Image 1: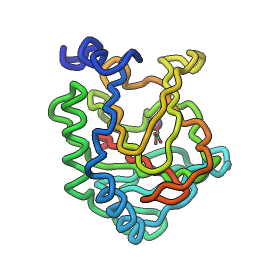
Image 2: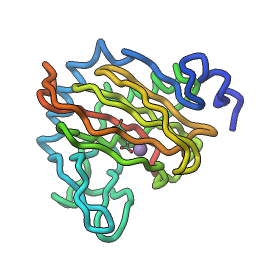
Image 3: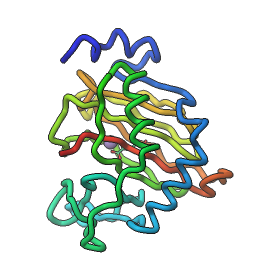
Image 4: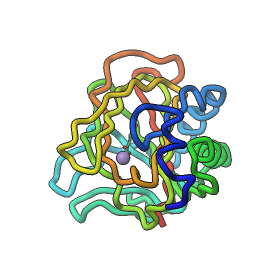
Length: 213
Ligand SMILES: O=C(O)CCC(=O)C(=O)O
Ligand SMILES: [Mn+2]
């Protein structure tokens, strides 16, 4: 780990160890980002994937970039083709790439080159239970996570599932960056409360940028 990935820099932004919170970092691009997500979802529609155990996830997902995160009876993995169409995932918009690279740099990780984005759509009641992001090849790269639409509560734990998570309010346009020692920290999203947002309607969107391949 390089010194720039240490906690000292990240702690300038937040009291939560290892997590850089960039409130409103994407606010000026909010409308363009939501428009881009809608266009991507025309080519690769949102779908609720099944866990390897057979349960339908409550968040609907799609992807863009060189690979997409998928889950089914065979497990969690990255796939270069969308299993629904057999076609490659749509390309990552330049707007996405530049936002993710800029946020990573602001959070202490220069030279982040994401090769994909997982896009989550949460309708009211949908959640993401505590988990680690472990399916990527390159754990030296951070995770950059952009919130759009309805607000949510982000759960930020530690290296053990048993670590009691802190709860962080996220609004549309907020960006989180985590990596280095915190790259494998447990995290999740509490059930999204009912509401309507002017850009997304009754939904929260999340863009999760990764170096997957
Ligand atoms: O929706 C979020 O803010 C978190 C999403 C997440 O952790 C994931 O997709 O792995
Ligand atoms: Mn995650």
